[in-house]
Picture 1 (cartoon, each protein chain N blue to C red):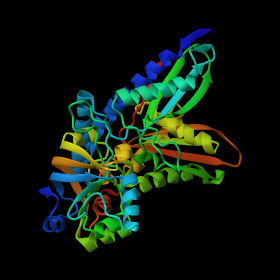
Picture 2: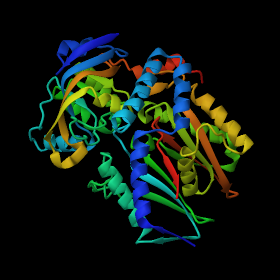
Picture 3: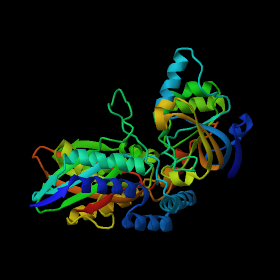
Length: 280
Length: 183
């Protein structure tokens, strides 16, 4: 049994909120550079250049990459041999978010009730997904999610007979409908299988996977490639102003499902695909 | 075509802009997003005055992140314009001449743009750090309690935007996509 104090959790979550909103991961930078080189539209290229300059200003001046610093989505893989001391783990995570959004000059975008809509003024609560895993470590991913693209995300409850062609249509429909609203070039996270909520969670998780590493399942890896090519034939382009780079990557996760169903979730993320990862 | 215009924007400038023009705005503009639009709309329904004049002004759909010490504003990119569609035609009919946001607009907004000789600009979504550097001053002038959603008066210098819907109803989102669409 290993003991971890909640103070360690607070500190790490705080730092990760600030890190994720100011710096993109290296894999995202790589696909960005490739997109600038290969975009065919001049206006599209101009938009991509602006976005690259934006990234560099964000890091050097410590201004968030995007003003929508998101709702903090946090994946916690807690080793079953870990003992948390010093109070509630959930409270510690929210305290980390509170401190990170205050000290990092990040926007507070969370309202306490979806109908009455009063701002909580500290960006809490976070959306936390816990998983109990083997071992004595805590694996944390902080993925602040902006809502321009979140609003364009979809769940499709397909029939088994719809098959892989149905899945392809669902992905293209979601991306086409998202168009300029989702701040293209997008990163598209897809979840296939499971249940209604499981496929949505898979799609969200897919966004946090390295965009240079394909799925470990061969047909899924091929599907990711095919869908990236198809999406880039939609013409939407950077900023939605026309072009050949509508998406930077498509990441797909799958899970077993029921004999009667084929759930598909498409979680769309803008080019500011933010996530920070640490293992404690 | 590259154009440099002043804000507030004159009737002539607004009418002369064409979908696809790259425009640099210098002058005074105002921010308002979801909650501020709702309040302004309710004020109009109750016959009350709006906190800002609409005539020849430009509204930027934006809620900034907080400013660090010594800076006028934090990250300051556009938010999705369609959420304001319900409220926009009334504001255009009161003289609003320009809107800066991102994403599609409704048919009703497009008709109100044509009817009033106005213009809808897009700023690049997700370029909040870069756009912040073109804002030299920011003052909250109404609805302070709304935090990031308060109405702000901004002084901007060469603020880069692209005309998406012009006063004739041309829509860059529709025409530009056709050129690169292969499926």
